[in-house]
Amino acid sequence: MSQTSTPLIRSLRGRVMGLAVAGAAVVLAVPVTASAAVGQAGAAAAADPVSVLSYTAKERREALAYWTTARIKAVGKSVDLGPTGPKAKPYRGTALKTVGRLFFVNTNGADTWCTATAVKSANRSAVMTAAHCVRRGSSPGNTNTTMVFVPGYDKGKKPYGVFAVRSAAAPRAWVNDSTNDLAALVVDADKKGRKLTDVVGGQAIAFSRPVGGTVSALGYSATRPQLGEELLRCVGTAKKESGMQRIPCDLTGGASGGPWLADFDSTTGKGVLVSVNASLDALTPTKMYGEVFGATAKKVYDRAQKA
Image 1 (cartoon, rainbow, N blue to C red):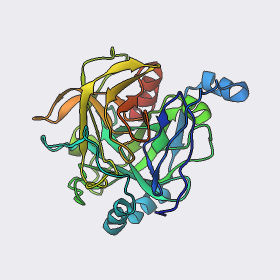
Image 2: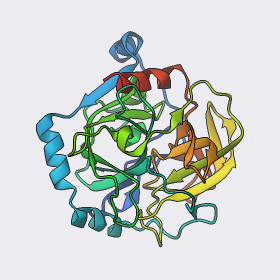
Image 3: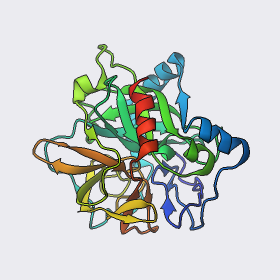
């Protein structure tokens, strides 16, 4: 990962957009209002609100071979987004098997990562994350590659193995217009033929749930001293703002796509997924934003769980 990579500037809704580590910088944005999709893009969205990116069997084998222990170690050391903020604390509860690092090669060709979560699903293979961890918004041809999910990652340890991503569903509104930043992945079985949630379990997921109550947001932030090697957690009360929901949190790059867990019990490691880390309020953040999971989020999730 280049130390001199230029950050992708993406404009949306007056917030700093994107938390995926890109080269030596977080993917950020400047404040302007997003426009509505029109013409053919609008017609496509009306016809099918979900866009699915698929990886061939060959690409999935190559992804598993690509993400060696040495490469994973190197990608963390190549990024330093400053000191971990006061709101983000190392997670100290029961080991979270369901949450892990999502490694991939971004549209600039740089090794990088996000955070993702195994959820309960019909195919026992669904993972939730942010759409910007899968593809560049408002740019249908720019998609990330060489993607694997490592549940329960902790300081170099991969206790539950590595799962290649076979497909990624995202709202077409994200693909065409950089809105609704969430995605649902489908992963292959592991080397022993076991489905993901048979190995690590899955978090419950809720749609159209009223915003509010205490939420734990988690992620593998590229801040020191952790540098993506350790899961960090913010806890706060979710509130509505500008069509999204927010909590006080200073997680940053690398935490993208990490879960927002309501009703979370650190003694069991279980909660209810109500959103994912999507964007920040500033370069030095005090707030984390996540989408409100509604009808479109349900369609994205259903596309993945039925795959």
